[in-house]
Image (cartoon, helix red, strand yellow):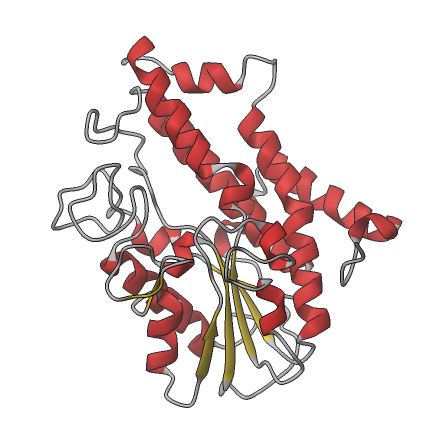
Length: 304
């Protein structure tokens, strides 16, 4: 199958993907102050036709009110909240729980290929994808299963490093060209759109502390998994910068509201949610926080 822009077909594109991977593996600390982005097109901050692409962190599973059972999509997810605040904006939300980059091109149950929602009239696109490519769900299940082997240690990190390298770090690097391909396809189908890549929120305590058994990971696996998520977000930021897209940091605005916090303070639910949300996913407060981060980016203007 021929896709919109196949990265394997052009050496120059492969070189860019390798450059992104090298930057991630080298930590790229220079990005701590922010990376200027070059947007594609100009609509004076009044984007009208908005398409939201993404996975379950976008769709908002179990958050009331669910409006699409196939995709576990809420009318209080961050795309809906963003559109509601921008009164001239018309939203087409095709985000779907369980989506990987592959679902940009292929149906997911009753949800058509997500990229099919784009056309030349699209003014704004948000993209939040990559977590399922890295394997969020299986990682959580594996780390919870292994925790009992050494509650004070890092059995999950040991498991993923058994081959002599960090399999999760490699998974992040392997996801970079997939996200690149998605962004190139977005630009191809929506050539005038402002394209915004949305990062993932703070899932675990930023200080590396744990909260077993509420979140059933071994003590030293908490900082390992925190660093894995930070690595994923850094990859998304770099990939956005290399592909004429902006990046929205949702980790910073949600720091201190991770799944280890008390129910009243957390914006991410633990594996046994106390508020309507999927395990290890944002609740309604988390979606609202991500919406505000997106709105702040849209209002700040391109290149800030």
